[in-house]
Image 1 (cartoon, rainbow, N blue to C red):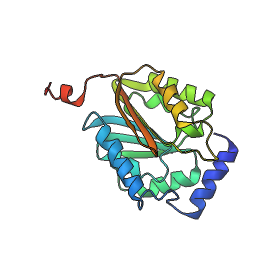
Image 2: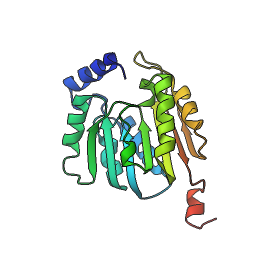
Image 3: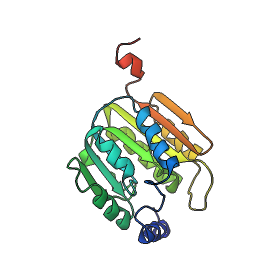
Length: 201
């Protein structure tokens, strides 16, 4: 991401620990609940969540994963996230700039969550992130993308373009949830539905 975007995020987190109202807004609480309910497995071994921001989703993922590595581009966001998750022994928070700091050495991940991050990347950087997702996702791994749909000035590209780029990896799609406000998609190398995984069908 550019230095201009870094300054934008530093300004946001300089004013408040929760600039997007992740803890207070029903919109954000509901969106997290939909994302978590869309995961095809109850439990995961190792998750990577870049762009974690204030780490509200990170806290929820920690309940479903043996280990969560979360990261952010903004040093102030990293500090906020570390405070928020300080008591969670299975969570690590790092400062990562995508795609250069993608933690390939810590792969494979059986869950990668790209929530409200892809549209801040220019198309070339997102192509690299998509390739890194493909390279570091476990053989039974799940990839999630969840993004705000309305336009805003800090976007580098549209949500539809972000999701189309990730779809080009070629993973089977398990979930698509589309609302006027956000788009959520879930892909997995294990193409079975939840019912199939549990032997119901």
